[in-house]
Image (tube, rainbow, N blue to C red; front, side, top):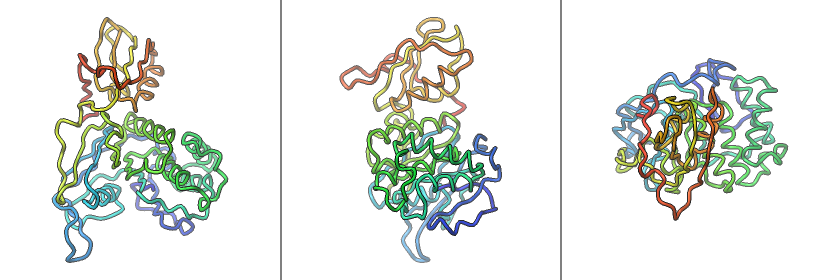
Length: 334
């Protein structure tokens, strides 16, 4: 589900259960970087005037280019927090500041919509400022990326749960959101689509967008989050020592660039650790889910870097960041 930062809204009578808000940037807005942080200040949420507090006293900032994981037991308020971040719910107390073009994948996606998969995505693209032809091409591209191209002409109501979830994820990525909110978005996807979503998340953060996610699998995007928070007893606790320390499998990349040159910005934001072993030669440890983003950044840099080797993660191998210097990119990491 998309939310933009505008007050002007197109009617969406033919899209039940979906609230659509248009960005004031129009067609050019999709390439604009996030202008400021999204902040929660003293936020609390309860349902009903005298209902128990689900969340209270929350303070949180999401900076451009960062990945944030939210954890917690069932019923602790994780989904409530994500809906507050996506501005689908208003806080009972406190403030949410920062108007960002936001996309949201809910835990349960309403699939019984009067569209085909391609028609639904094309419709959302036009609502968010794309020309119809551009929207249709973008919709087709995302369906192909998630392995659902064969179902482009299938009515939404006839899609399997897994195919419907692919459309749910595609609709969130269609407009290059400044803030991407994922509530168990990997649930129901096949292995290839799960990997594709991990790549899409890496692309969003590398492009300067913020991503916040909940997932039941503790290995999901392991080593990649800049911060991990636990929702507990109505509050939000930062899990120290996990934000920047790589915990999951890493891919080892050996690359050669200009002597004394800096890593391309997208690569610098993504690598877990880096070492210049000789003038112009670099050894990079990258979260496995983000390796495609780093390789693309190296190969498309001007001048392009030469990728000497890529070693995929191996469970039995020593942790490939051993002996490397943790990467620091103060412009994108909190």
